[in-house]
Amino acid sequence: MTDGRVGGTARLLGFAGLLPSLGSVALIAVGWPQAIAIAAFYPLLILSFLGGIWWGFAMRDTANQTALVVLAVVPSLIALTLGLGLFVAAQPGWSLVAIGMALMLTLPVDRRLASQGIAPAGWMALRIPLSLGLGTLTILAGVLISRYP
Image (cartoon, rainbow, N blue to C red; front, side):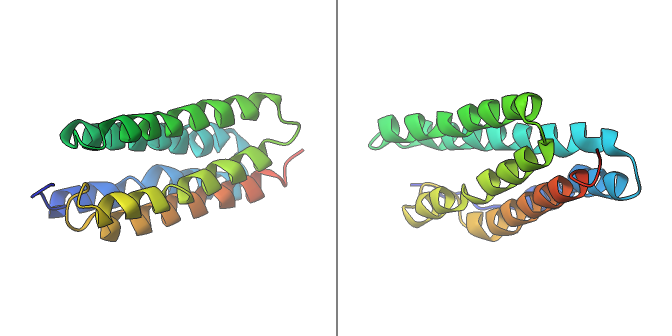
């Protein structure tokens, strides 16, 4: 379906997108628990953004559009739910762990989009390290933030 390809600039900016989470983990590790705001809300934003990407893919695939647009709203709904969980959870570290896991669980959908030719060439080479990287950093932030009362 697509004739596009993930280019070098997209790869560079994609990996640069790990820097806010890397920074928040470093800040939490050195004793600044207020960085939980970045550690939580940045990956939630990315989760919603990913749903937007899937929505864009759906607009180009009229044969499977209904299923894809339904699927595309799921990341935003999950982000909203997990974001609310930060405010009601007795220990927000668990919410960060759940957010990190949600990011990683997007990979099967991305794999399906790639295998069906809906996503551009090179999509999984970008998505795997980014989802695993951001998911791992978010989980690490959750573990580190759990040290604080």
